[in-house]
Length: 395
Ligand SMILES: [Zn+2]
Image (cartoon, rainbow, N blue to C red):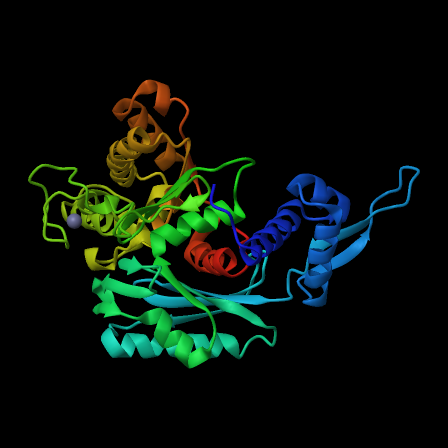
């Protein structure tokens, strides 16, 4: 094993102590020592430093069992704030978030066809607005955006909808705001959000499939976000699902996005209405152009059979794609996020059935398909987790 320098082991120990306090909630110094394997003196020294920095507070004492009651420690949830940003398709969403992932303030700015420099300037406006809402020290800025990112260099390789190519986004923001800045793909940070704020006990592997205008997966392997050799791990939206199918934005045909994204269900719902078949949609809109996912969800909840069968087909296609992931990775918990996650149990049931049909039974039988409880905030929270992970080693 490589010998770590004294400095490295000091950072490692500090992070281990902070992570333990974060995970346990209230805990005594003695128990931190027991759980981390560090000596009581080392733990005490590290904790004193955290208390000086206001990162950890003493919250009270544990009930006495005869001996001297132990002083309990906890993280000072609001001692630092984080800025989480989601550069979503129609609006840029930003929030001020505390160390426990609680959203304290938010600003949403409509993108209105902006791209290139104009979109970049909107990001600056959003961050300035958020900074004005808090007077706490800011730990950093985290950004999740659709497209291909180089998270190590903080460079947006390609974000088609924003017309950004090789944009050094992290450096530009760091120069302007003098804060550590992290950038990653939106589906990848969504996985980080689920892993940080909704993790199951002892869970080390996880897949989050984000299904909205685009489709992508974020993969956590052995407790770490897996980026892949060119940072494109989880780009399942462009797996060919239908031979010779519809043209896709990527230039190929029959990709998963052409049959299971929000664009695909909107197109099918419009066809349903245009064909003049009896459907609740005709009571909700006056023309097919007005159909969006909100309208489709209303019809779905009203029990419209045509719309339900559209959602079932989406579940079927997603199920087959996820079966490939299950075979490749053998990960037991697969979480669905994004705007189509609102279709809930019926969607997850269909996905589950088709994962079982499309993957080795022994693997698929252990796989659970769930809906993320983090809703629309998943990317914002994931962007904040990037900061927690990089700045204080909390993830
Ligand atoms: Zn494609």
